[in-house]
Length: 255
Image 1: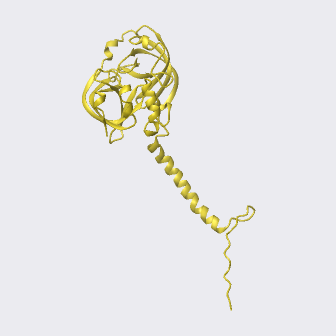
Image 2: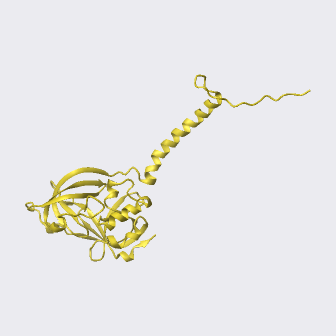
Image 3: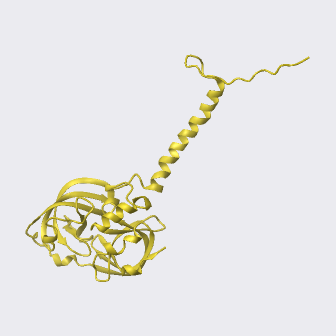
């Protein structure tokens, strides 16, 4: 006498029929895991990849201020109101409308008070203007351009990353790290200010412009270090709300 083993058949889903039990079990397990995965992705991915850059494009604006050449071209804008307890000026680094430094009449008007038109992009305390035009104007009454000199804060050793001062504030996302290296090199080699991003163990972020020992830009001398973790030892100088670290580029150390 032989006993036949019941044949195993896979459940086949028919749209007009009830969902088979095995399908329901799978969906009850899979959907919560999918929702959990999405939540973890949203929470951790921006911190890992910086895709959702906190910077923002503020559109075309007109600002009046003093055009300064070193260490990179930037605009010094008097702050309104009583600034006795704060820095009296805001400083905006300048770029061109593409992957270049500011062009047009900016080089001819350095050292002059101007009305400047451009696209303002900012992230935290870092702001850049993609310059469209400048027009020489008279200095405002009671404002002394000589009061914009820097103050030495001493020698420091800083660890961080070199990035370009246009994409990182918000033009590109992400604007830092290995994924942005080639774009940052193109921008910096084209004259966009190089910015040194430093983050301490309390997650405070500071930005420094880079200058050599003579206070000049170092763009073409640090291209091979862009997007790598590096250490710089040099003199930190504060210009109102802008900080500059002066050091010999040859002394920059890859970590």
